[in-house]
Length: 97
Image (cartoon, rainbow, N blue to C red; front, side, top):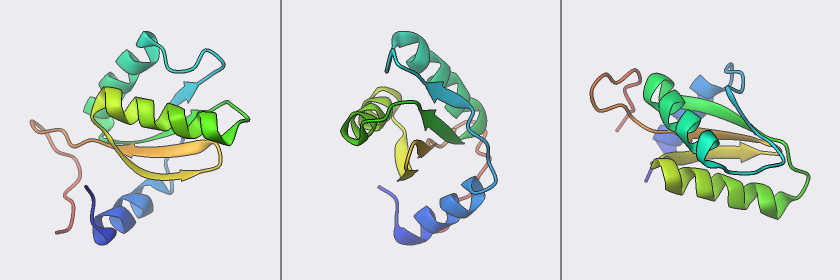
């Protein structure tokens, strides 16, 4: 679980990021989860673009992605979600306490 200070820190770092993963009409598939895992290992903090018009389905997709990858949801705004998962071997971000 992220603290308020950590969430603000991650949101400020994610502000200038472009989405690196798109989840389309097929939804959360094995290929999407595999790509998400690899991308989180490399970048730690990513933006995901959800190409679905239903708000409830987008929230379900974000929860499924978080559960499958072990990532934490930092923020969702519209069709964009920000996820974070620390890399234990080579951390790129040092979160505030």
